[in-house]
Length: 194
Image (cartoon, rainbow, N blue to C red; front, side, top):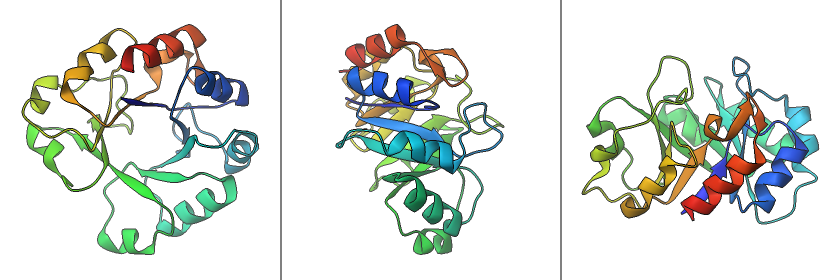
């Protein structure tokens, strides 16, 4: 199972996650998040990273022009759209992207079944706030295009293996404090996921 370490705020944490085996890193461009980075800060980190690591830019409630500009400016390789956007928004995007489902019910996880998507636990603020989804919802569901997020930790990520998720996404579950990653937890999380 592939692993994304989200909420990266420093080059040191980015390289530590890559060295531990992360497939993707997440950079948060949502100003209300404690893990927020400016595009200039993200660009400074991303330009120094090695190849073959996905650099994911997370957005909340912005227009397509902003997504395009930030991704092109920073070198991000994928946009994560963490809000409900209309068809016009997606037509205007010029960068690869994934949609986020903030799941409130079991039926929500079936949305966009023909696309790769990230499924997170719903909460009023954006991001799962460490809240975990009910894994029973995924029994009998084709999870091969689902990236699961929300409340994951080095301990509980082992429970995901039997569901055949495409990937998992963690932020607070591997942190010392908001935006500062714990190298031991990151390594343990990735080892247990893979």
